[in-house]
Image (cartoon, rainbow, N blue to C red; front, side, top):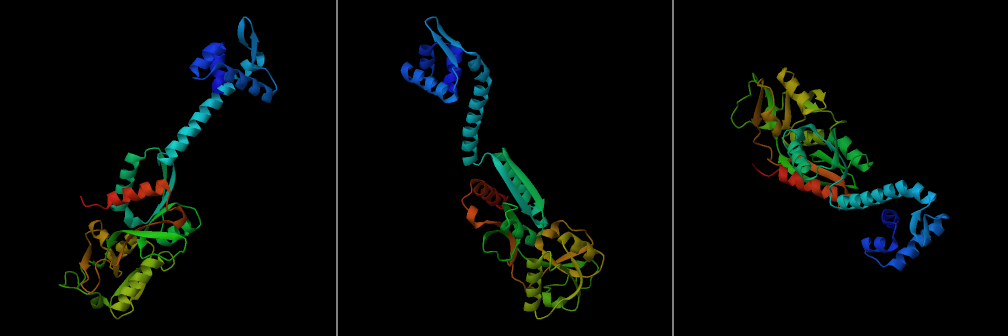
Length: 293
């Protein structure tokens, strides 16, 4: 197509060959083979020079478009290999929006502005299922996570549970509060269906403290749990990242019988796509987001 366009512009085989940085005979042979392949003459050759035939004039615009799209194809392949274009579908849990998600997105967008980011909020279970079924590319999920053989997880931020109590609760402000001190309290817990990983880890924490919680209400999100705590309905265990955003009517207390790094946020992805350029780029952005200020 490039040869056809240059020859159509110069109407001279010698000048066209010079512009194409090739010898004249191979150019003549190439044009002739193209004409034989399509079954029509594109150029009329005579002692007076070269002229476009009606067929030649008719294909010029198509030749320009073909050449343009070929160049775009090459450019897209090169940019895709560098992680500069493409689509990345990311599902995230609400607690990641406090710090990790906005910092990661800002870092990634500054370096890969041509990548289309498609973000959706979900629970950990839904995100893991979406990865398994190929509906998303990356999940920012709560750790520990349900086991899926095809999905890999990397812990990127560690948290710990704190007790959320109504501000007027008698145990609010108690020195060295322990989880076992709350064994007789009504508990607000995550739904075991929508957030089974968090539910199981909280149940395990209570079991380790020697009791089974009296669950009076279930909620799908930590924000809802905190609103119910504020209303005085009960107490809750929540990741410590929420203590900076909750209402003033909720008190957060450290629990001195729980480990400090037993939960957190993890980046999840399909194992088969571990070498993906876009995945690698986003992992670098997540790593930058968790660096201390």
